[in-house]
Image (cartoon, rainbow, N blue to C red; front, side):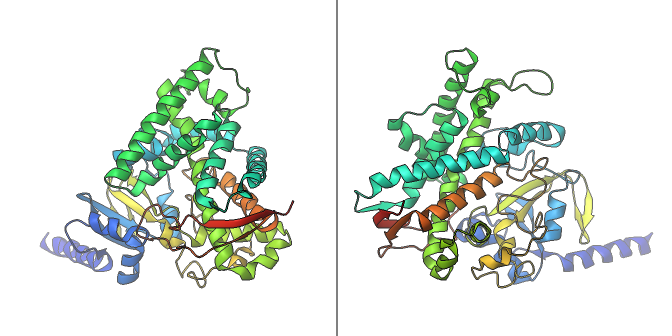
Length: 431
């Protein structure tokens, strides 16, 4: 018996030697200070792909790498229910919405989302966006300068609402766009940023709830295949109609991520400016190179910092015992800059995407796994198509100057943007 206990104790000590432990009783403040680099800094320091830390008073296991990603998206081992802090649900996703669902309930809701995010829907949305950008140029040429992040946010909000069938007055575009973006900005915010995001969520849910109610009552007629109509009359697997408040949350979960693409549009413009050597190839209108450039923007620049899930059942991986209920965080930003996955990860090289390969678990700027069944963002295709449209527009449809400005962005701020928002002046159209 004693020999058995000694053997088990020795095994435990060996495991501890292989697992890095973050210093400090709680590292919440360090996470807020380091932002996107919180996990990667420690992976680099400890030369590991997994470490244990404490955040908001709870033990958290941080993991990184392609194999870690495969484990993280194994539905038998991990669940999303209970993983997301309420403060994030109250700003970004909505309480108890699709992002916190698991198993068959999640699959059914996800398939419903995917039904109006087909390739045809993606193309239509991108075309609407490009048309609106062209229309906006007529206003821009009469201005001394514009801030792209601001303009893109308003344009894409208008387009997203039109595409989903949500009526939006011209006079309300800016305020609604600000609210959608504030939900995203509240993700890593404390104090005023958080409360602003929470208030924006409450206002938007009330607005969308009223619209859905009007559709259900027949007071507002919309296209049968619009996301608004489909959400208004969606029935759950049990045959009951989706509860009104939840229908509002989920419709917001269609529009809000589209508005958030304005961040990627701004970083696309920054990438163009910082890498003028790519412009000649982009001007040829080569769709393959345009997509390669867009994918490199998604890899190189910060968007999603990390993702969380809870252990669904006890299991062992890398000689570490994962216990049911443990909170685990997957390092998204770190994987996008991991030298084991990418050659020269800190250099902007669109050509790295020339090689067609399976990147399901190695390139995860909007989540990994199967988008139809798992927790990968169902709107990833929409993101790519809109980014391609914005890139082609900025390169081939307009000329502009980039004045001196502060284009730096804080890697400690989640989410982040170039500080100036990317100012463009002396805009001239080429079409």
